[in-house]
Image 1 (cartoon, rainbow, N blue to C red):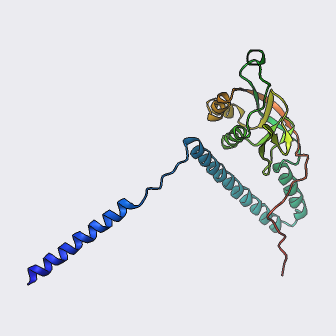
Image 2: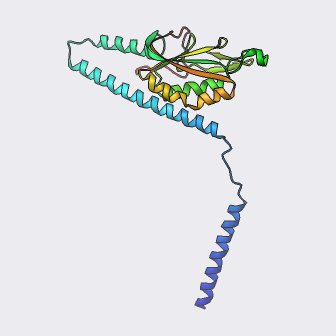
Image 3: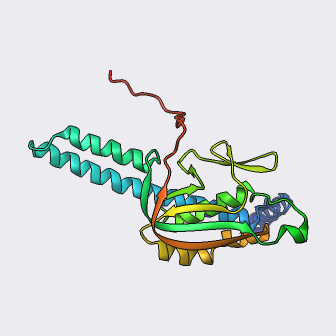
Length: 235
């Protein structure tokens, strides 16, 4: 009698395992259909976001330490600290002209018009986005495309097959991208072998780099739009 119970339990377990295996094989396998380029873009975006968060944490800690020191030392006026912070934030937001060492990235056509009979078009918006993401990851401090300063709300868009930045059409080739960086030589070495250069070449554009000791970037000359933000009122 005991052997029959053991045989019954074993048979039940085998049947249960077979049923689970059959159910698993019947379920469709969901695969990630994104290509390598899309995955790399998402990875670069996450790396840039991580870098920005670390930078914001460091700045917040430094500002907190400055406030604490001001409160302990009454000889300093806290209004001066606030004024300095506002000026620093305006500069960081791209609302002020900025001067410093950096890199000029020149984008031009790989081919001559006379051989191809095509108008000199501007590079697509997605290729520009990839270039700006890589510049930020490799240490760019401030960026301007010709006279258009790039800020946190700037966006490249395709409008009637023409690339626009800050809702303005980019000028004809060649186009200069001005990049401020204290480590311009390191940035240049990284960008020369970057994937964004390959993407520009695939689209038919050349990318060259030049280190400049003093580079001036224009201020963002439009009114920044603040969305999804509300004033916190004290109760």
